[in-house]
Image (tube, rainbow, N blue to C red; front, top):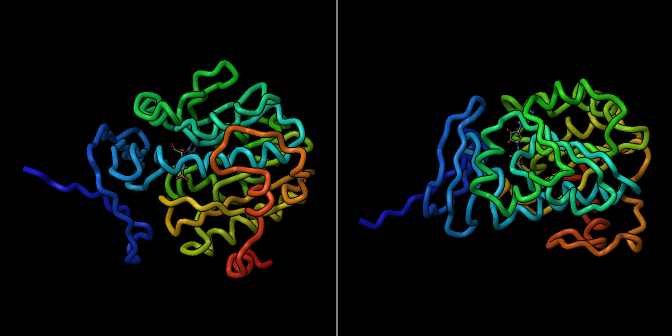
Length: 280
Ligand code: SAM
């Protein structure tokens, strides 16, 4: 019997918006210590990682998110040597970070070992750099890890799930204060900060929290087909280097599909409604 299987992702809990994907096969379904995890093969987007019913990454569009979350801060800092990723257990951010020759060490602090193991097995094109000798995988809570490290990282990337449950503390003032302390004196951080269209209050709060701590705070955008609203925000907090003032003529050629020096410049140009969200 032929059967169509569709995954329905509620984009806004209880508010009448959902996205559906036709599924060819479910490769893994597991309740981990922290979340419900699935890896499925979808007709259009290929293999996907799903946590608690929310699409985290897909082999078809992951390049947008991972290139932008990594290359914006790493091409803003003139000499990034030590980088921390909080969350990001799929390994996509690490893969992009390690394209930078200046990086001597990239630490991945992911709370859920099952996510790392599943991505290594089912999503090798995303997780391929996790076994690189420059990468250290630490399994633990990013909030605790950041609190325990001072003046150590040139770049910190917060590649987290949405601001609920285990990831709730990764959005907001106390955590950003600890990130500030964990960064070196000219360090820079970036976090994925949700959809300004559907969650303007979240974006505003997170941006203002970062702004109250970092001398330079900027919002940039990228178009990610599988994320709610399709147009996703990232917040940068920097102690010294302004990501909008990078001399893009000096950015070297890199093997990317979304990020270019021109995109680096353009992604900080915000539509009026998003400027209003962050009070600019
Ligand atoms: N790109 C994705 C997105 O925005 O949908 C995020 C992908 S990544 C898989 C998110 C990871 O953050 C998950 O694997 C989750 O286990 C991890 N995570 C959530 N809270 C965490 C915490 N407190 N410390 C470390 N990792 C955490």
